[in-house]
Image (cartoon, rainbow, N blue to C red; front, side, top):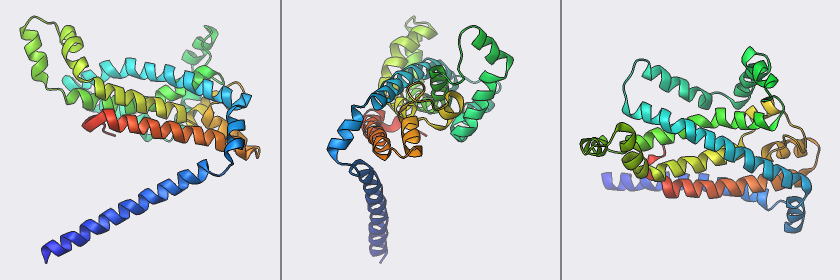
Length: 265
């Protein structure tokens, strides 16, 4: 009797999973197949969509590199060391992930547009408000917690004994990190970088608030989708959405392929 009940439960859970998977597929396929291929290709090749693709790729690559440069030392410190305020720091690092992107964008806009620090940066030639630099900063601020979580989980998965052995053989802390920990963490770091880049390309709310939505200036793919939907240019909006879907699918595949058990949200 118990075995029979277990079988029913298993079939029920699998059935729910299949239904949700089918629902997701139908929604995404509905976007991709809404317009004839010839129309989509024409939109893909338009100057506006090409500009949005270039700007999205450039800004997301730069913001991802910044996330990697910051996440690696911070995640290593959080994974290996104990220090006062570590729990609070862990919480602070996750706040941007919990905030609605629009709220994060408002905070960034006030910081870079009103605060003395933001005004000083603008005077020095680093203007973030309504510029492509603002897109990079918005992507960095919103996506850093994801890179931190994956990187920290990856470092925690490396047995500290390997570092200890390296140190007994004469390596310094830095040499043990570069020669032992980092090579063993490569797959996790690659997975985190891919998903951070993908999320950077898809970032909308914070970028909209800080960089604005100006055609052919701060128009990334998500902003292009928003602008074209707002002005009734549905085919261009669908073209941008289709590109974002394709990027997401490829990125998630790479994340699952290389992340293994290290990816933790």
